Image 1 (cartoon, helix red, strand yellow):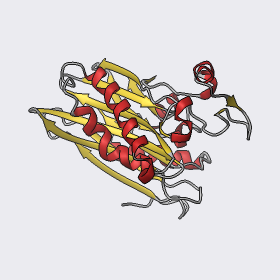
Image 2 (cartoon, helix red, strand yellow; image 1 turned 135 degrees about the vertical axis):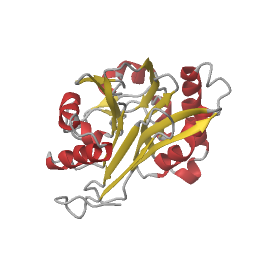
Image 3 (cartoon, one colour; image 1 turned 120 degrees about the vertical axis):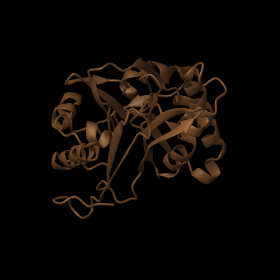
Image 4 (cartoon, helix red, strand yellow; image 1 turned 30 degrees about the vertical axis):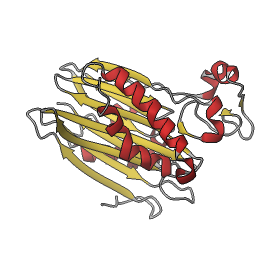
Length: 275
């Protein structure tokens, strides 16, 4: 663990790196900063390469818990395992991911006596053989691809005001009270999440899923929590780190810039260098 110079002692910065063990030699770096709230860090991440069925997979994710970090930690331990253990993953990874998200949410709700009544948002990315990339998300975490210097958002921000109709059809409501942020039933500022048992009848856990084939001009992938995206646009983030070749330094630079821009939330970033 490293602490970045210039950050307040309350904003502990953890960084790390790794790379593909196969021929692609894709490298990644991550950086996590504790926000200013008076509770433990609620973000966690996954960044790893491993082989399964003689194929190397890159698995990357950020989970942002709320009302505690128990659900986020559960996702860190279980979600990728649930996706990859689906019997149809290799034939239909999109359907496997959809089923795994749903089944994982049901397991979280069944174990709410241990995990509590909080929840978590999530963004996951799986790099597969042949340059295939599968991105899924629930909530307001975000995946952004740099393609020839241009930022391409690969995920969908699930905001209550955008999904008001679906929430109201389930018997819920969207309100600005308390405060000035739209919330489901006046409580949760995202329209989709894992867990959140008291709100689940009005709250979806269905992910948006995008599967694409990477192109030769694709330079890097950013996964980050809303602690970054609240203060930085997609293109801003891409421009900031495009010339930073080391992905750990790039992730660290994004997190530090978010702090400079007065983000008070937990900040988590993963940068995957594709070239």
